[in-house]
Amino acid sequence: MSQVQSTTEQIPGLGKEQNTALKNLTIIGYLEGTSFLLLLGIAMPLKYMMGIPEGVKYIGMAHGILFIAYILMLMVVVNKIKMPIWAMPAGVLGSFLPFGPFIFDHLLKKSLKKKV
Image (cartoon, rainbow, N blue to C red):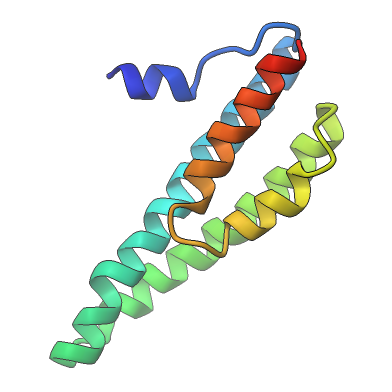
């Protein structure tokens, strides 16, 4: 439970709207990262090892929607919060890597807390 609390905690020095946008980015990032891991770890092996393509169809569609939502939310948050210059490219790169959104979220919040 403490892990969930640490991912949605408020960053001091940011306004309520900014913290809400950051929280939404965290939630969408965790959903996107989880869908990517499910796609790579479960759906793809089911398709290529056992001949069951339905997992890729449904998990892949969900991942695609979450990926687009994550990139759009990242752009919204960049406009609302004065973020480090590395944040936008790192967020986009992180969305292409397994565990990337989780690492990006941690590094971004660490950087924002240090800035305040």
